[in-house]
Length: 328
Image 1 (cartoon, helix red, strand yellow):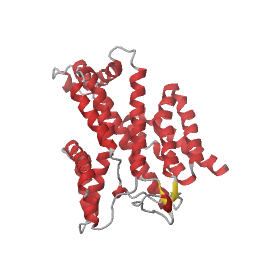
Image 2 (cartoon, helix red, strand yellow):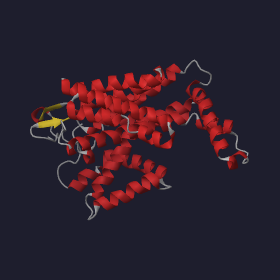
Image 3 (cartoon, rainbow, N blue to C red):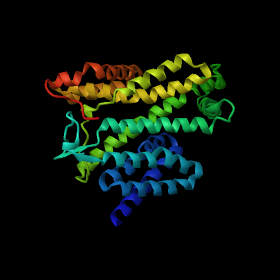
Image 4 (cartoon, rainbow, N blue to C red):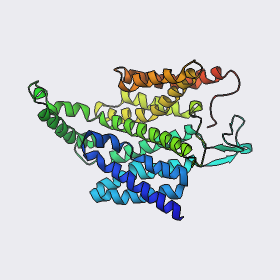
């Protein structure tokens, strides 16, 4: 109890400090993406109690910047981190699993990564719905609420770079165009940040030999088939809904497509593992994904690959025998 209290308190303090750096320039913005890392690391090494304490401390400390910051910390970092840790530390005897279950450690089958991704996507969808409800009474709804802040940012950007001011660019028009797309972009960024911090936290826990569970079989990530139906419905809604409501369908499509992005990446890792230099191949691939001009196209292709994998079973074929999909 005492150890969890100390570790959780320090982790919560570190996470809150990282969150508050977002207002201090580009470096602070980058560091804020690591805010979930201390929370997840505390939980994956010392259990649910530690991540709960870390979340409570982080929420309280971030509240020094105002109640809005505290609420954001709780909703975006503390609560989802506690849920992910709680689920990740679930295990059952291998004998109770289905015929395709793969015991990961000893006689235990641990909660699969595919289900963790579903929890994360479900939380992202819930946050988006909550934002819609909170801003429903505002003029223009969620996009209308976001637009003034976007316009203000664009004006400041134009003032910082005088060359742009004479280009005849109307900040208001650009803000009106970007505001409906920002919920999707922000949701995608949050999902990426949570996944990366989760993988990093587990890796650090293993390196420190403090991990409470073995690392998931990321290459074997599998998703339930019903998810593709939800994704199809959301994508169809983009076409059917009127323009002022289509942004909601775009955001939900992004949330539901994210798990298939990860499944597509799992296929790439499986293919790379069959080559002579998998590390070099993956490094080149992620360099093109992150810093290349084709990054957005690669993301779309990975989602498509993840969808095709549901029926083609590339990883199973690469494995030759048995299954290369974790039990879901």
